[in-house]
Image (cartoon, rainbow, N blue to C red; front, side):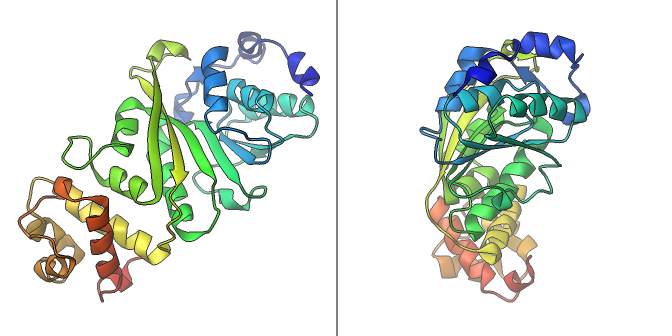
Length: 289
């Protein structure tokens, strides 16, 4: 099954042959350690029945690892023409299991690719990791079976935010948006030296699996607005920070059973969800899109 892939040259030879220097515009840091790549590829569990979507395959290390792990349907999204050519070489050796799409992941609707279940598995560029995740979370909130799950590499600091609990310094807007819809597990950390070129920060691999809630696009937009206002002035009491939503913060908080003197980092996911639901149904929330 992997005979064609086994004949491909080592990753470092591929990088050398294509003169593949990391491009800062794309936030590229290439991961070539086969053991680490194998761990990431196995993190989703069995993927033989899934459509596996990779963002930014680079020299193709993770692409190869996912195919070796049994991916039968795989789509690699690449914006860099140099890396797309490398991905096409892998596709030629992959017996039709890999499709390469030249596109910007920030504008591409991944729910149109392949069939469910879809798993996103990627070493994300740091400079676009958060907007990409928020975009995908909106899809999870809106469409049943949008994604079976995600295994993503982030800057360690961002990964810690995803799984942070109320009351901690890392707990913030991204924590709430993520945990409202997904189970977040930080799997393992990687030092900068594992990459070429090495980034100045450590990285972490996170697994996200949907909780099954489908609040819909209006309530997702309301949650973005509520968390944006609350954590935008996180040192202030909610009666002050939520003024950015319009209307009466005190009335909104009272309806949700939340003391107006509390601060954003003390609220649970359920309390934020209650506020978002009330805001979505309010005249001010109806204007949020």
